[in-house]
Image (cartoon, rainbow, N blue to C red; front, side, top):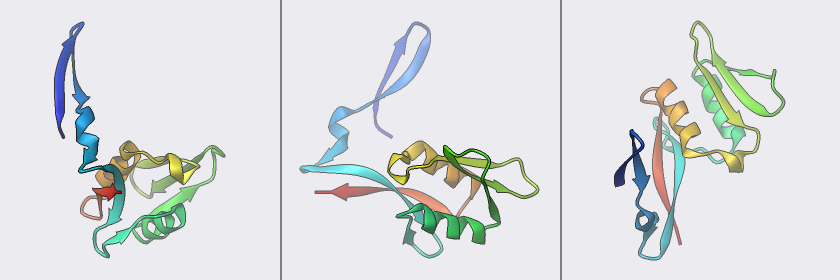
Length: 110
């Protein structure tokens, strides 16, 4: 995590480094990886298959979200319906709720 810490109106926050998004002319994007198989999560079909094998069940209550719940826990994963709107914060939510099963990695694009 790089950037500059800024203190403003009593709040300290990390402001990203604008030059950090490029690496020799390439842009960076985050990707979700299933660690045991080293499989890149490229769609919700792939993610749902992996999550269900880890004990997660799909909820169909909200038509605007994809939601998964794990039995006997309070964990709930809520994702935007459109896979292209999946952000790194959603990926990190999956990582935190599935320790040692997923990683968020940088994917460099030319």
